[in-house]
Structure formats: C-alpha cells, structure tokens
Amino acid sequence: MLTGFNTTFEEDLFRANYLKSRNQNAYVMRYNFSKDRKLIPLSQWVNNRKWFQGMDFNQFLDMFKKRKYRELLGYKKELPVGVVK
Image 1 (cartoon, rainbow, N blue to C red):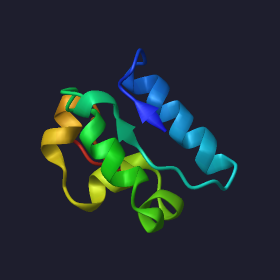
Image 2: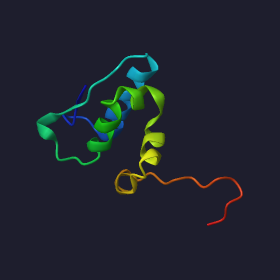
Image 3: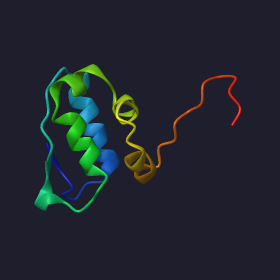
C-alpha cells in the first residue's frame, strides 16, 4: 500500500482499515521515505501482522504509550466514564 503520494493521512488510514475489514494483510510503503511523520506509526502498525489484525490504530497507540505520535495526530485519550480531569 503506497502512502504519502498524493494522499492524506486520513485517506491512507481509511485504506488500511478497508483492507483489514476484508481480512487482507497490507504492507505500507512510504513514497520517497515521506517526511510526513504521521506515516511512521501507521507503517509500524500495518506492517506487523499481529498488531494489524489484532487491534485497531487507537489501541496500537495506547499499547506503547506513543504519546508523541498521539499529539502529532491530534488523538486524545478518552477518560473513562466518571473520571474528572
């Protein structure tokens, strides 16, 4: 799956999830070793079959406490019900 060539991160994530929903394995190839840092965690998740088939992208980000990627992607960890920040 070629990423970073005339596509956005959201489109690449959608394509990865589409392949996953069809029980297909994918392999991310970043175009020209794209400087887009958002593609790094996506390629780490997709290129490992156990992680790709066993969890979704948010679970992957939580698994290794990938805080810098969460902030880069704009993902915020949702607090459990009843927890006040």
